[in-house]
Image 1 (cartoon, rainbow, N blue to C red):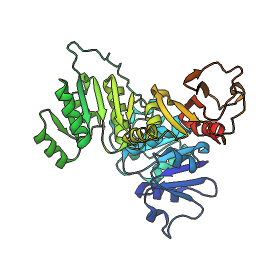
Image 2: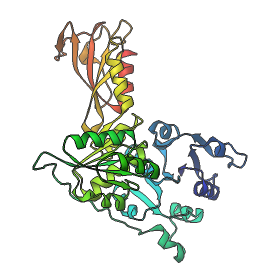
Image 3: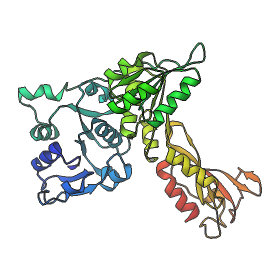
Image 4: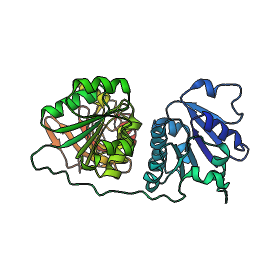
Length: 383
């Protein structure tokens, strides 16, 4: 089997050493270069340095052909996000994530994620689960949680209110969360902030006139304490994309919150977060990038909009004399699957019928392109 192990700490290192690298192809990903470059690192095991919630890093590590991805970092939200990316983006047959909150064992089973609610991961247990051992020692069964957990999906409440005001839970009390909550309160909405850092919690509690809850806003218990069962909107705006994703998922799937909005520090995570259930993503990096592009007419390609949760963008491409499609009939240009031309803008007019239209230098081509195909479309149209 091809096995990708995320996290080479206490659990990951023991587990990798238990594997027969003559039988299995093993790849390790960790953010710390020191642990991967130490003399004790097993021979014959490839390694990559970086944050594995990055799709590109997982792809470079061979996720598309992996049989198993095991997320064994110390951060359970990171583990859950990686495992979901493995299943949804790369169709990995088996994805296993270590978590520390037993309530999450059931929460992610429907997505095909094996969640191990264990405080300390024994390498023997991981190897036994991976190899499909028929029996485990009786004193370890409880640590694994139920063998077939069922995810409970609460029906989402309609996003309707009588007086035009909403109850909004803001996860993250930093600068973004603080100013967001203040703006919502000014507009007459009911707001509760959840903040995990005690110092930030104390500061925000003294500066804003709304309930502030101390705790991890991605956990069932803390969201319950904040009144998530009656919330209309959840906005997760912490500094960590994985925490924002899991908070939105727990809010929607466990409490039936109608609208989940997540901040994405890495714009590359926006598409996968939407595929995993987040209704709306906001990336300041992407917003600033789009503003810059809109101010630079010579920019060869720019994204005009993203359509809902499907990750398909409306992108415009400015053709020059060097563009490989110049001189060709538009209808004969072969684009990748699920991509299509919408219009050609020329001389202040939009051409939408391509029967005899020949592309020329100076044309602006508007196309539909999924996020994972945009580079291919750019290559075809611009070279």
